[in-house]
Length: 318
Image (cartoon, rainbow, N blue to C red; front, top):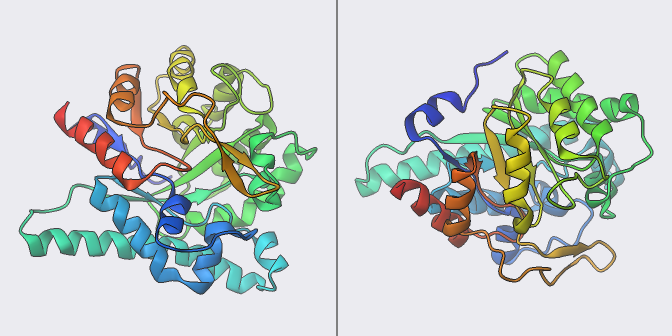
């Protein structure tokens, strides 16, 4: 097993700033993502746009770039006529693009005389089974698939990404217990794999499928390959309670990167208004979450580089 990539950084700074919504930034750059492959489509068509998006988040102060592989699956690529070997290459390419952005950012700082860039990481995203379905299932769970079936679905993609050179895997937006069980089992059998595992939650006490968060977290921490655990693509108003509950279960680093609080309509492929317009992902929220025990803080869907910059400023001033 490779070393925990977060330990040295957390020992130095106490908090790691994650990036925000990659697809959000790609759309802000003028890209149309109305496709079942979502941001993974640009791995084929416009890889330079992915580099630019990662670079925007590094410039905003993020320590971690999360790759454009969330929706990159063998099944999803096959539906677009992309063969197995090319699909694997594109998955590896997602990591290479984030690394290119990291190198560009370091070169920018050196050219500007800003000194050496802080430690920067690349996290290879492993999205849930529901992301491949592209019907909003990642916000519901209950796929009707067994743990063994979900393990088979994730196995080869995890193997490809674990061997890609990424610093860590991001098993993210997991809505149901069976999928967490499948991923934890695969981490234990995949050479070199370490990961954070984050659940998508319906409220302050349950993951999307209705399972109590304490039960879900217990599954995640059953493997020492899971080096951080927490919540993402969850409305920000639920994060405080989720962190309180998580601290009763584990002392591992807690990761939180909520979405904007808006809802996703898979039919129209549009975002709906936030249930709580006062709940935001910003510096004040980050301060509160860090005080509650979060060690890795960022944003998910609809969270921009400007918001990540607010979080980074808050962390730097702490």
